[in-house]
Image (tube, rainbow, N blue to C red; front, side):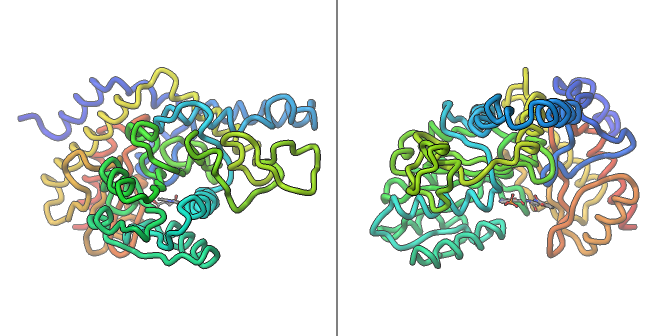
Length: 390
Ligand SMILES: Cc1ncc(COP(=O)(O)O)c(C=O)c1O
Ligand SMILES: Nc1c(O)cccc1C(=O)C[C@H](N)C(=O)O
């Protein structure tokens, strides 16, 4: 039986994605295991931003709006689209996930007229719950928090929309989006999916599943950079009816007509509110180049294999640590470990150049971004974890 160290070396040597790591600007001394919070910078981003600032902004000035800036939200959206299983013209990039959640939630409530309830998974990432509460105060809906396992059954004739996190941020558990979508639709409710922790980690089939709306951030597994703009998916079937509450001039049908009244643009552009953050948008555009030649299936395979290797390391080296992440394939790209002192250990790991993160009450998360994480990083993290605890 090969040792963990031999296994890590063999797995890295056989990794079809190993060469991708060289496309990232990573500290060679560091094992970076927090790409589920902030992805690492692809090397091409700095050069692109220098060009955008030095040429497009400094030389072309205002003309750049007509030379690609104005259409960037949909153009970059169409680059995200294949990663979420969406045909072109249904994804727009801009604003934050929280803001897009608000737009989609209110629009969904308006479509599901006559229904007065929003269901939210009880373990949701906090912003989703906060936004649901805030939106519901405006629309007059009530928000019901339901344990995720019971979410499908909880849908009733009162339910306007079910808001679900595709992958749980704390445990890494993958939710049953196909079953949940089918259950919601059977009872006439809509589904809004938060894909923050699944986009760029695993194959997503929004069009095929018939998911009604989706949002997600681009600074995790899409490596767009801190605060890079989020995306909003509005499928063709709802674009006509999509009536979002932040209807600003950038989403207007004819923005430079400067009309007093709002008329929404055709298509997904109606999802926009105000002027897009072009520097962040184009940083994301450059970051998406690392996906050229990569199949999401390969990424998924490596993500699962990294997780399995992490489980083996924990079982052998840190047996007292509880693995919160499901061991089967129903998980995203992270391994969450619960133990007393996790907060202090996360800090101690950082001092040893192993970066994961801590989530209350006692969880150390190790993010496994397959484009740059090596099996040897995983082994190092668990070895250091053991040594920090003894
Ligand atoms: C599931 C989920 N939704 C939303 C967010 C954040 O949204 P925002 O980009 O608006 O901060 C995060 C992470 O911060 C998240 O993990
Ligand atoms: N969005 C973040 C931020 O602005 C600062 C620090 C971390 C984040 C995160 O993305 C946290 C992340 N969504 C989580 O899963 O906990």
